[in-house]
Image (cartoon, rainbow, N blue to C red; front, side):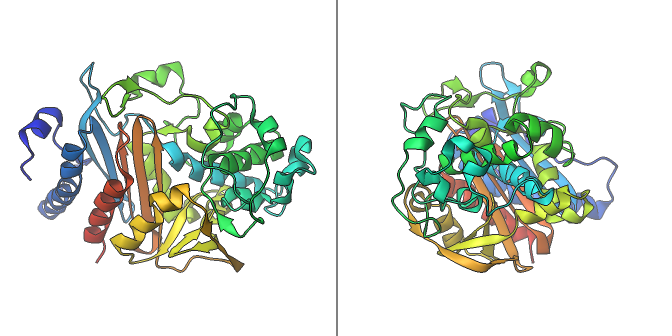
Length: 386
């Protein structure tokens, strides 16, 4: 697809990963896939002036990578499938995997209350919610973000004084404090800090060698610079429970491996297999979306309208009625799982359909509108699945 001249000047050609010389039909498939990705991603990148984008697609266990633009405008560093991007709230799916791992190893129950693992919260309003409520944003009205005046080490004081405005389990209000406390309690149940637990128990077991809570000095050269609306470079700022809610950095290579593990958890060692499977269980119905731990679910095929509604500003910033699924729902075979993620300077989206053995991740070093990410991914997935 011909790109506008501005995009041609900024973006490298899409890169398709192939390890061996391919027969003619495989080359045709690669060219078709590249055209599909180019046609979906190119216009979005041009419209929102994205510095760089890394797209990874998995089809029946085979990964393909398409890299556009630069990881740093100042240094003209090209994006590759190994470039590190901030995942934003896709980090919540990793946190959910950690909590599900704690459940699978008998250290945590979703019926526990936070005070069991954090005695300072015993008897407080937040202690009326369960770990499950924290992990599904149904604790009773926790806000989207911690108030600006809460310092990095002030989360405990905040939760001690917090007052609910709804009974646990009656409404879903998307919340970093809720999911953050969920991850914090999960790590405590394992006798560890969050970063240590994630980097020692979860990431290695998933085979992720370039995914970090704490980016080591040796990996900083692969860490992209993000850009704000004024095209000023920056990276994520710390905050209360930041690691648990939006703090993971990863590459397209690792993220597609992560989606492949979710598409086929059976290849993982127990208890990590059961941990991943636990994040696929549905607990609450909100509109057309089912809320699990981290991942959000839709019957597949799903219309673009329903997928965008589930990722809309209304779902992100407002309280929505939630209906508990009793018993909790094992997802039907035809289910799409997805999660969006943003920081001030990065935007990401991931989705997969186990029944079709397809998945996609789109990573960008600019925070651009969520509907545009969802539309691009939906367009690609629709063309991949019969």
